[in-house]
Image 1: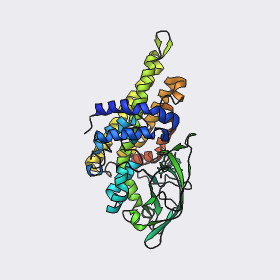
Image 2 (image 1 turned 90 degrees about the vertical axis):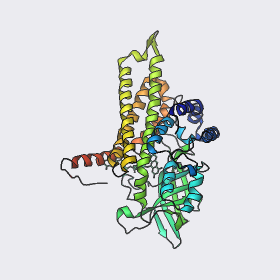
Image 3 (image 1 turned 90 degrees about the horizontal axis):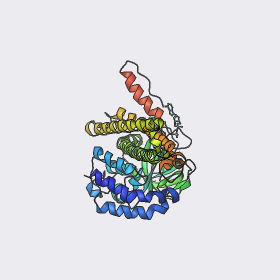
Image 4 (image 1 turned 135 degrees about the vertical axis):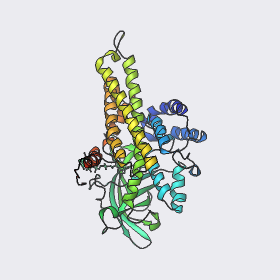
Length: 394
Ligand SMILES: Cc1cc2nc3c(=O)[nH]c(=O)nc-3n(C[C@H](O)[C@H](O)[C@H](O)COP(=O)(O)OP(=O)(O)OC[C@H]3O[C@@H](n4cnc5c(N)ncnc54)[C@H](O)[C@@H]3O)c2cc1C
């Protein structure tokens, strides 16, 4: 258990003050301070809550971690201070659920301890990521090894990572959903190259806060580096989706709450004329009222999905998991936009975290499945109730 009041107080006192260093000078500049906070988090027994106790975590259930993720989301470096940042936490959950004993010792234990970072390389620039069964990265079976050749991009946090979990075709002749496997590839393996950190809205980022283009040229790894059965790559990718979606959506709600608080503070204190505050204007009041309602509705939707995952399993909760993705990403975008508008010129500077989030979370409507893909799934399910069976498409 983490007392949420204590956690919120800790985030305000220890992490928010580091934010400006990150926003002005980048991830490398703030890393020593982040490491210091990580030690404090460990001393409090709050480390990596979703991981089991034997891996240094708290064994926290998803419905409880949802609230923690919201609290940490209030600052861009909250999750990384607790070692629950994407994509590492997703990779930890994957390795914990499906990795071999050797994977646990060699890759999971150092990751859960925060001694290493990792990345997840699935999307390829030449193929529509919205149809993930289409990819060219090939893992050729050479007996005891795979020889992997391919081109990936938007591999978040590859810069400085110890390993990538690479999605590659191992069974080219199998049915589309059974063609690929997930394989652990050390980032320093010969043939693995980071081509660049891709500029996102003008910023290449660095370290954990970056997205890389990768080239794999006949990268040789033992076949024992494969996670799960050969051809199980998509099934595993689906499995990591449910809890990952709750983490992301609650993090976004944390961002919304911070943006909302900044907007309200500004509205209450910015004088348009002596004694006449911005918040007295009806349009600003509407921005506040709309944001309040949307954030509260979004939180209830996500908590409902988390409860369904926990009680009935991921398959039963798939519609709720799809629905929260586009709904909360939309709320996030609108709340950030309103908060920036109320701040005026200050809103587009990096003196608050608003513009960082505006730049980097526009992608929330794209990564982890674009809005349209999830809306199609939800609408198909709903239409089936009315007798129309719309064929699944890419
Ligand atoms: C910031 C960021 C971080 C990312 N991190 C990772 C990562 O760590 N690892 C990784 O492997 N990938 C990552 N990705 C890639 C991400 O998963 C893909 O961008 C996503 O799956 C969409 O694929 P695409 O970009 O190829 O868009 P496309 O598939 O080309 O789609 C383009 C657009 O077409 C529309 N569209 C697509 N399908 C449909 C449909 N069925 N109906 C109607 N419209 C549709 C949508 O508007 C969509 O935005 C990241 C992306 C971003 C932006």
